[in-house]
Amino acid sequence: MTFLTIGHRGVMGVEPENTLRSYLRAERCGMDVIALDLRLSKDGALVAVHDPEVDRTTDGSGAVADLTLAELRELDAGQGEHVPVLEEVLDAVRVPLQAFVADAATAAVLAELVLRRDLTSRVEVASAQEAVLAETARRVPGVRTVLYADSPGGEGGSAVDRALAAGAAAVAVDIRRLSLETVDSAHAAGLRVTGRAVDTLDLLRLARALGLDGAATDFPEIRSTGRFTA
Image (tube, rainbow, N blue to C red; front, side):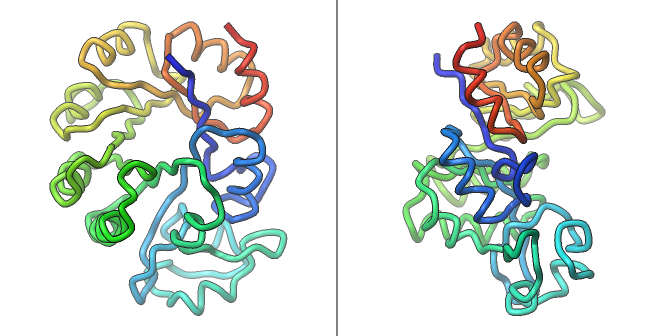
């Protein structure tokens, strides 16, 4: 089975996160998938921003939901980059995308775009909320979904059980909290398992030892090293 290397917010270890510059470098470096975060602007645009506020990643301040797309466009997201909308990303790179959404409203707008542009083979939807994934699957038959979990277990049950209940095809878990037992359980249930964030050679070796299907990383070097790591 192919070991997937997932560029986390592009390659945010060396480029401004969630920018076209970062996504393009991730593609040039050979990342198999690019993971990005989506939020809605005040006027309903799907913008690539991780935090609820723009303060950390731009030279502006305030909540993404309180800023229009035009206002977001005026901000510097690092090295002169601007906050991109999802359709710009789709046009800029060809690799598959893993789009993380935190809430139902963002997921609904994303679902409409996936349907309109027939993107089910190119965009998979990720979330930490089972209900968001289940509703997305209802809206977009055939869409691939990924459950993000901080740990294999928790108050809501095991990540494997939660992913199955949501109809997800994969689960992405903090690699430092993964065990071989959890990975085997997920695989037995037909789920893919990826670890995040795999930013060192030791963690890459761990990902391989655990039999993971892939790893999300901030650094392009992990991609080149991963091809030679057994």
